[in-house]
Amino acid sequence: MSDGSDDGTETARGGAGATVEDAAERDVVAAVFRPDDERLDEAVELLESLGAIPVADPMLAIRPTNAVPREDAEYAVLTSKTGVELAADAGWDPGDATVCAIGTATADALRDVGYAVDLVPEEFSSSGLVEALRAEVEGTRVEVARSDHGSAVLTDGLEDAGAYVHETVLYELVRPQGAGRSAELAAPSYHG
Image (cartoon, rainbow, N blue to C red; front, top):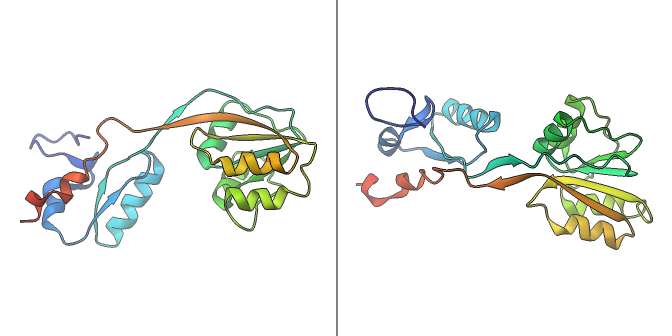
């Protein structure tokens, strides 16, 4: 991204971070691959506060599908903050479903947009969520709302436990145009 300066250099992220040339001259350089949103900003700020030169290089971009999770399930599983935000923006109403979050960040995002959270597994993973639900989901409808890169461990595990699983892909993960500029820093020409 250009920072709007006229010197022809490119900053790591619209003025935050370093130019490729600056980064090559410093000892502590860190590539940041977070999506181009507040998560990237937070990571850049943290690295700068620690004296490092962050080079923002988002390797994933979020492409919403405009799908809405089903509202007739007994259990609704969300696996990311992004999924929560998209479901809320679409006006999704979980109704009387038991709302499950895969971890604390997802649970916090659910609460932030006004949803009650009924279950967060002790182990923040697909297998942890399956284990937490295994004894309760037989014969029930379970809505799993997530990205197109979700693990089959979750859906297969819930089906193995006897649930009728429906998956809604809320967003796709794609590689943004221009990704990979941090590789320039690893090139031998920058290391003398």
